[in-house]
Image (cartoon, rainbow, N blue to C red; front, side, top):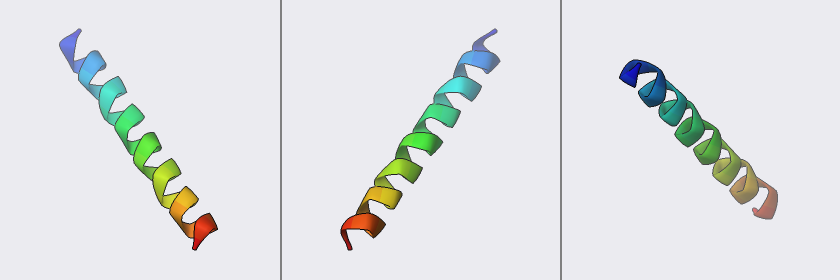
Amino acid sequence: MMGNVVHLFCGFIRGFSQSLIGAEQNLG
């Protein structure tokens, strides 16, 4: 069960970092 939590957390971090990168590209 902990594996699922870690997997979801990693997915959330990945999506969040991608949104930040996209925002920087839009601003740039």
